[in-house]
Length: 222
Image (tube, rainbow, N blue to C red; front, side):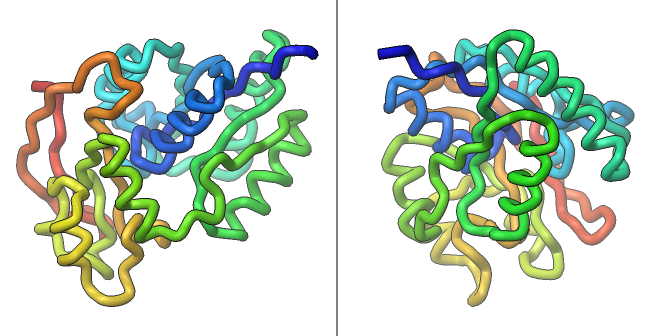
């Protein structure tokens, strides 16, 4: 039987992609590397806002190559898709034709990814698709992942949630209507430890700031 081909993992640095990666590794799949989006002018991970250096530390702790797709802070769809297309072309040339995403249930996002991958010659897979989010948050903790909230939508959560570790106490504190995994964009996370990390990433959680309707917490390597 031919060996399954390696997989490129879409990597935000947050819990959903971390658990999806873990599921693939537990199934014995070979991971070709991590793909992350970086706002080059800010030197931070797009949307999540954590310093690029922290994602590099995650990749090192996971023992995986990191492929950074550098974008403007507010890229157009054309800019985004051109940059992704360049990386996918390089991956295909290296024998990688599958990309994994950590999405849980947003049908419109999945439809967009499916269409984009079809145009760019990659096969998308979704290792954690359809998981019930409250159970998924508990499973994340049971595995030993430790995510901290790096960004919150201030229309849905108070700024004080930024910088808190996502655990049972935080889930219990979430206002009604807020998804326990932040799947509707209520919050984003940075994972600093997990069962597939060779070592935890020492971090310091600093001050909070509001910007463009979102709350960010300053997270840096300790």
